[in-house]
Amino acid sequence: MKQSYLSIPADVHHFHRVVSQAADIRTHFDLLIWLQGEMQYYLPHDIMIAAWGSFTEGKVQHDVISPMAEVRTRNADSDTLKPLLLQLYQRWIDSDRSPCALRLGDSGFMLQDKGLQTMMGSALKFMRSALVHGIYDARNGIECLYVTFSTRPDYSQVDTTTVGMMLPHIDTALRQVSPLPDQALVPAPTNHFQLESTLKPGHNMSTREVEIMFWVALGKTNLEIGCILNISEFTVKNHMQRVFKKLDVINRAQAVGKFKELCA
Image 1 (cartoon, rainbow, N blue to C red):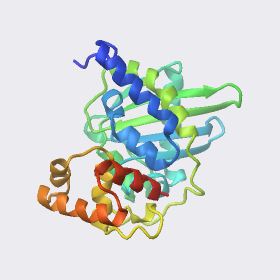
Image 2: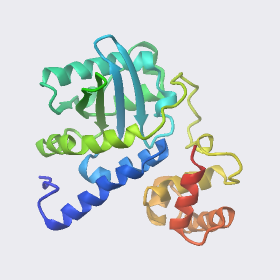
Image 3: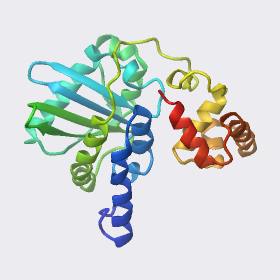
């Protein structure tokens, strides 16, 4: 069984370091790196959807945060996501606005109509469990719903307790990120990881180099990146040397800093 994150002193320092990073979030990429990094220790998930607005009137906006380039806000149509979000919102209300865990088994989560044909729809069909919790903004009368989806078979009672502790920090981080100008459905990218569209022009990195830097920014080692991309550790190292020259840096930390600056 997973331990409570406050069970030993070392975990207290780790918890403090992770939640303190919320204050530095400014872009969607910052948010992605944070949520897919050490935050996974406290809130393991593959996809997070944040939704806000008037759920009772069906006027809801959303943000989708995922390491899958095709499963993000720009690729998620509001009309196809809304029925699912409203259903999950009602589950949260029925739980007296307390964190609730959902277990779907092999059926996964299903979108309606054209949503089934999207990359978002395909990804959700592979999710097996979800955690649902929200925050009510009493000053503005707006509710924010947060849903984490996972390929794990279920979430534990410790996870449902943890999400209640982590959500205020996640909410704070998201409020510092400017919303995207639109949420229109766009054609799904091809089957390789296309991240160039999220970078400012003039970076001069190849598709593979951008892809590798994404995983470097998530703290992955050359060996781990090689396993993920099905290439050798030596090949990853060679790509990194070229990236260092293109970004005019001398180490990984500097490269990650420059890479974040390039993210739109």
